[in-house]
Image 1 (cartoon, rainbow, N blue to C red):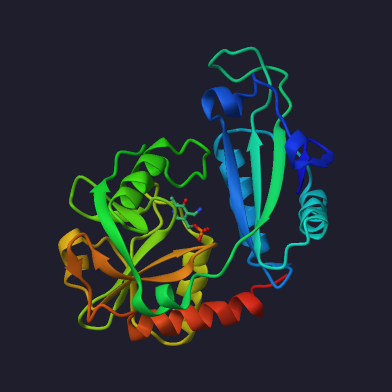
Image 2: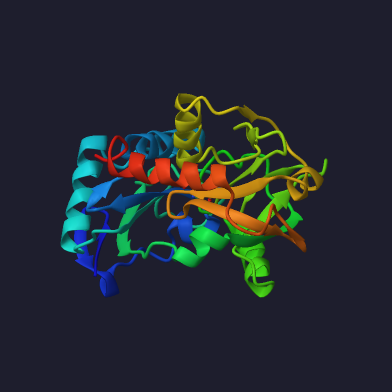
Length: 284
Ligand code: PMP
């Protein structure tokens, strides 16, 4: 495997950053994960727009031009012979003597890796997955795709220990914000598609945005509003979305089975349309 570190392609085993990188010491950095399908990037521009936004919100300098970054992404996919996988990129504020304020002369560090991933099994697509619900203990800037992910890691670990795919985080009002690495959706008994509006409380998923676009085009009834855990447990369907899990049907929330325990019709339809979109219009 080959990685990219600050201007150089290196063997994965030699891809290192300094111990005083602020990403390592303070989680002072941001990241993106871009899906590679059939050798091409999916929704590349929206991901790079979100990277720019995350950097700007934290006042971290852009390490390279978009054109240069796109070349590096392509080269990395080529060198690692990725057909179906992902590109991971991370930018931190750089290396400086440990001190909380922004350093004066630090250069941002940029690291990219790529790996293959396998498609979710047919079993997952048909029978869906379980999610648990946990308290959302994160901060008020979940819209920034920061590498500071401790609450997400603890939540995902709790999910795994409970035989679940994901943990849906719940705010003080009892409403679901999002998963630890995916956005949360339900389909109400009235057939309305619901997902939480993109405020500071969630990461505005690129997959989420593409699904909303597809729903709009297909004339589906949808609304961006908060929904409670109780409402989710009474829903007709539920699913999770992310760049690497696409649309994953959710058929159990805590101990409650959703619908008839099989992936819902609308979820499956959206999954199919998203996969078609990823292979066509969304591919670059
Ligand atoms: N929410 C969180 C907290 C995430 O980490 C992710 C995945 N990076 C998402 C939502 C989904 O975002 P995307 O569709 O852009 O992968």
